[in-house]
Length: 144
Image (cartoon, rainbow, N blue to C red; front, side, top):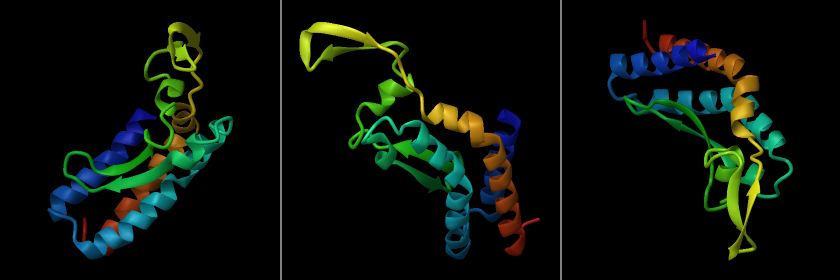
């Protein structure tokens, strides 16, 4: 999976290196294609987090065309779903929290990863598709 992910990242970096700043018309074509390509991972992440009323609605796809960090990113808004990070297991598994804000009583709770599992399940196919899409669009715009 990592090799395929690197292929998409390399393709975006090559595109930005070859073209410099990506022209607006190319961005206009790339952005929706990249978002469409990443939709299976987003759908799977939302399905994995269906136990939450806030996480699925707070999870979305963003695209970036920076030289160092270009690509598709799936993010969950910490403002709309502050519990997403600990449940993903980023803060540790199990994670600890106070019971209803009572800092005198703490409990440990098991993480319920939703995003990492979605990437694990759908990531390889999506990354390959994204790399192919980037190459096709780039070639239409004179990229070799």
